[in-house]
Structures are given as C-alpha cells and as structure tokens.
Length: 295
Length: 216
Picture: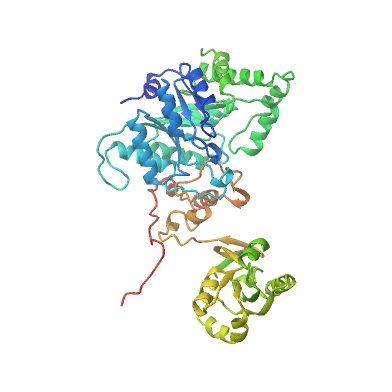
C-alpha cells in the first residue's frame, strides 16, 4: 500500500511535515488536540520516539493514534532501546496497522536522558535499520528467514547540513540513501545560503529532502541551541531579530521568521518541502504555515 | 601493557557491603591498582585507618605483587592466620584479582573497587579504554581505531550525527571515535572504507561467558 505521504513526496508538490510528541504518562489531552489541529494542514506528522532519551508513551502508540484520528503518521524509530528482533517486530506491527512511513534514527545516548543507568542497545544503527526495512519488504527478516505476509514502507532518515566537518556527515548521508532512504528530514537549518549549497550537492541523489525548521521562541533559546545542540547554527542576525521583538512578542517574531524561511525555501525551490518542529508549541504550527502563505 | 582500570567504590557502598562484618583483612595489588592509585600501599593504608576509625578490627593487610597471578594462592598463605581471624576480605584489586582470591580461599570477599575497563595509560594519569573484547574484531575497517570501544554507541557506520567539535555528545572530555577514524582515513587516503555500508555486527562472536579450549 502506498502511503499518502509517499504519494505527496512523489507528486512534486511542496511537502510539509510536522511533529507531535507523545505524553509523559497516559494523559491523552494534548496530543490528540495537536493531531486534530495539524492533520489536515500537513502531509504527515512525525511521532517522536523517547526524544532526547526521555521515556514517554511509545511512538508506535502515538502513530496509531494519528492513524485512528485520520492523520498520516511518520513513525520515528531509534535504535537506542530495541535490538534487531524488537525493531523488526515493531515494524511488522506498524505495517499491520497501516503505519507505513518510518523515520530511522540511531538515537541519542541513554546517558543524556532521564534513565541514565539504562543499557543503550544500538544493536543496529540508522542505516542498518533502513536496510532492515528494505529486507523485510523483500520478504526476509535479518536472520534470513521467510516472512508470512508482506510489508511496504516509505522510509527516511535525517542529515545535519550544518555539521562541521561536513564530509563525514555527507558520507553517512550517502550510505543512508544506499541503504534505502527515500526521504530525508534535515536537522534545523537557519542559514539558507548554506542550505542552498548543501542542496546543490544533495540534489544529485534520488531522495526527497525536507528542510528542518525549528521555531525560535526567544533569543536565549536560540543562543542555547547554538551552544548545546550540535549541528544547529542560528546566525547572529536572527538572534538580534528575536531580541528586537517587543516584550511578550518573541514567539510572534519566531513564527514570522519560520514562516519567512519556509516561504523562501518554497519560492526558490530549494528542496522538496519542510519539516516544521515547534518543540512544545505545536499549537502555533498553523500560524507558521499561515505566515509562510501555505494555508 | 594492558591495564585493568578501577575506581574506588563510595565509602557508603563499602560500609554497606561490610555491614555486620567487624573483622576485616585488606588486600591490595602491586600492579594495576597501584598504577591507578586505587589499591596500592597508600590506598590500603588509608582504608585501614578509615575502617579502624569506625571501630572495626583490621586483622591485617597485604599488597599482592600481581593479584590475578597464579602465585597469589601461595602469597596468601603467608598471611594465613590473619586471614583466618577475619570475617571478610576487603579486596582493593580489580575484579580479576577479587575472583582469583575468592577461588583460593573459603572466605567472604567484598570488592572495594569497581573495575571500569581494560585500557592503557595514554599520558601521565590518563587511562583510555582500548578493547571491549567483543569477539569480532573490526579494526580492519578503521585503520586500528576501535569504533566498538571508542564510540559510546559502538556504531560501525560512521558518526551518529551529534559530534560536537570532535567530541562525544556524552562528555566533552571524550573524543568522538568517528572523528578520529575520519581524520586517520583521510590522512591515509582511505576514506572509501568509511563509505562501505557495514552489516549489523555479530554480538555473539563468543557468547558470554567466554571459554576457549586449545584443541589437542
């Protein structure tokens, strides 16, 4: 079955994805609200998998909820918490429930999260998980055994266009495509001239690229990311622009900047779409899309 | 030379392990734990003072030349009486030494140290993990830098994406293994070896517990 997200990618339209985060617990108030808000405005929504190694409601359960509510989920799967048996089993389950888009991630170190003494698994890495998906589609598991029933996925991965040095990142990017990535959602990009350079290189590969847009919520938040998030580089002029916002209006400024960036990416046809991450402020994603003149 | 790298357990944990055991014999090691200052003469002496200060009776102490050596049994015999008087042996060697001693004596043993890794001294007072003895050596892919040991995630297909100025995401004191590998391969003009999509590793090269029998 071809997912609607895959159809969108192949249609040549400007694709928009966003993300929803499952709750810490079973309180299902916020997440369905975000799904309801976004499901008709984006082509698909990622469901994060214990983001930053913090234990939460599972991405598989979240993706199922998106599906049940009529949205199009992209199941994020990291290799941190499951070995190859568990990963394959979850892929089979996902396929059986119509969850056919998967974003393959290696995952953050366990030690960065809220269960610091847990065992990090990393039996597979992101490119091996992609290869495992392609193998399952051929009717075989990683043990070489035949599968009863078929699966089909639209599988993707991530890249960090601002990585320094960039060459090892590009080598990994090419390996992910070789392993079977059909789409790439990038780490946040802010310097669009840099991103254009990356796209000059990336365009030669048979893969759809969605530029990562992280909503800036304040100048200190931008500085924090520069300092603490590897591969994210918010230029000084954007930080200054955030700082120039009147008191209490920083979020509006962030929405304006994100919208402006998306519009430029689209107008200049830099890549195939955007992946909007509003980390904790999912309710303003429609405002960002509106600022970008997408809705 | 490979070294067993250890760190002393917290006083709280040692006290907990010694709970109800009033008479203690302390054993250190003249090799690795002397080098790491976790179980040499000065550390054994300090432990003795601390335990005596708690009102425990330290029946004796010794520093074995090489605790993991087969001759350890004979060395222990010299202290037979003091060992007999003790309720427990508090052992300031690596886990290998603890197990060697435990095999020699019918005695309660308590380790005073945690064994962190097998490594080498790469500078004065700096010890780095070298090999996790995984049983399926992959050093041929990376010109001799072990990605299984030196990468926090043991990744075999390159950077995890969060390299921070050549350091690991978990600790800015720790080098990113894949940055080291990349630099080495680049210098040698062998970056192509990084482009090979590596298959999932065999984690059962030697299923735990390892055993090796020399064929006749």
